[in-house]
Every structure is written in structure tokens, then in C-alpha cells.
Length: 166
Image (cartoon, rainbow, N blue to C red; front, side):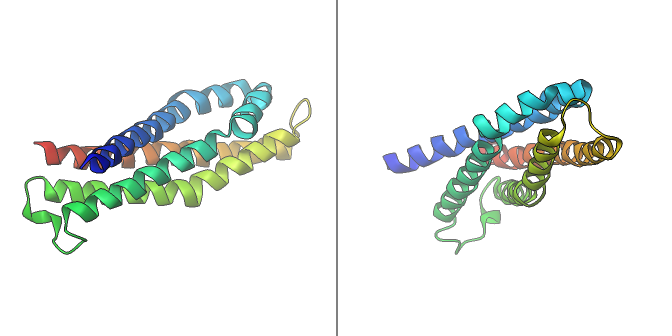
């Protein structure tokens, strides 16, 4: 029984880290980077290449999803019983769907766009050329939009998950 509590705690902690990291990036880091322009090049380099922020968030999101699916498997007797038959089951199901969409969105779109932005900013010497500036702006818009979309999906997932407890 203790292993299920450990799985639950690790699922919650990794989800907190995933959502917290997403909030930090979308609400604080990206607006600061956009406002700072090329002077934020070293910060982005350090976060992405030294501290591996995207990798750490990808690990946290993967752990969240894997542990969540394990819990759902236990709750539904190996995916045999649909979760709609217990209180909060519909909310839980929707929470899982929103969480999976956030996970896929993050890995398929956010991560590659963030890497593109990091590489582009690393190419800038003192001041970006007009072409570099336009490319950076275009990718920044995608990353900012994607970040907020991820947060909305994670929030909807969280609402679904907590519905089980009401």
C-alpha cells in the first residue's frame, strides 16, 4: 500500500513542478526576455544549456503523466471500468484528457520552439540583424502563446483532478 502513496505523492510533486515551471516561464521569464531583448541572451543560455530547464520540465511532465496513468489504471481495475461510475469520475477523465493534451503540446510544439529561440538568441552577437530580430519575434510569439495555452490546459486538468475530492 505504501507504494501507492509514494506514487501519488510523486505524481503531485512532479505536477506542481511542471505547473509552477510553466507559470514562471509564461508569466515572468518570457515577458522579461522579450523586454530585455539581446541582453537576456546569457540568461537564456544558462537556463537552457547549463541548468537544463526545458529538460527538467520535460522530465517532470513525463513523470506526472506516467504516474497519473498508473493511478488511473489502479482506479479503473486495469482500464476495465470506465471512471464515470464513481463520484468525480467524469471530472477525473476530463482532467486526464487535458493533462495529456498539455503534455503532447509541450513536447511536440513548446519544446522545439523554445530550442529554436535559444539557438537563435545564441547566434546574436551584439545586436540582432533585422532578419534575426524578426525571427526571434516570430518564435517568441509562438512560445508565449504556447506557454499560456499550456497553462490553461494544466489548469483545466487540475480542476478535473480535484473534482474527485468533492
